[in-house]
Amino acid sequence: MQALQVQTLQRQTYPSILQNTVVVFSKNYLPLSRISIKRAICLLVTGQAEPIDLTPNGDCQIWEVHSPSTVLQVPEHIRLTIGNHGRHWKVPPVNRRGVLQRDGHQCQYCGSKKKLTLDHVMPRSKGGQHTWDNVVAACASCNGHKGDKLLHQTKMQLRKQPKAPMHPAVIFADEFWKSQQT
Image (cartoon, rainbow, N blue to C red; front, side, top):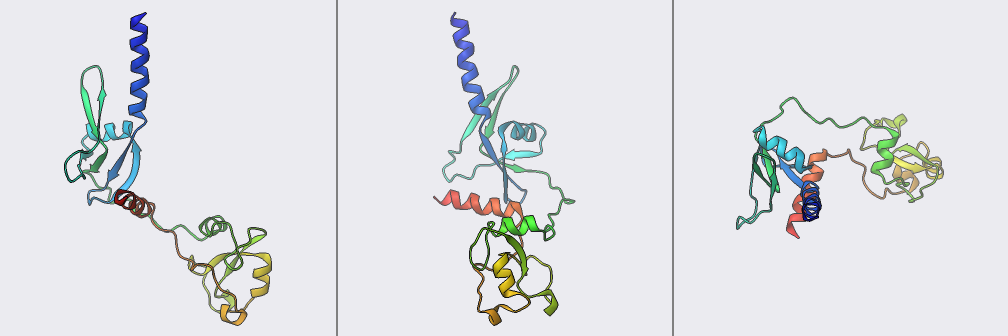
């Protein structure tokens, strides 16, 4: 009966450790993403990553993971020791789904969420390009009202300036450093 209780306790503690996440930094100390502790173990054991301590007094979180033959210490931050020079992130092509997602599925002129279309801020007939900084989500009535005119001719204003999506690692790094300040 006691052996059954011990096994139950062990099953409760280990999954909680394995549910933790580890922040991965690039060789240049740019925070890239959060990964599972299992993936972090693979990177550490194969020598593709090394532990780092970002705390000023050396009290970073370290989890101990036990295997039959060894005990691994996995820190909350690791740094890749290898670099993948062939991987470059490219700005995705402009498409309806991406523009609607960027604009929060609402018209950039009136804020409506119904009957959305794509509008070229500088009309293509006037030399505007089909680029991230020239295409916005617009409801059918605003798009019809603007038509083939420039913004100052219609007295319409954009709610926010359109721009290309950022690299996912840059977004993660920004959120990571903001969370560390609080």
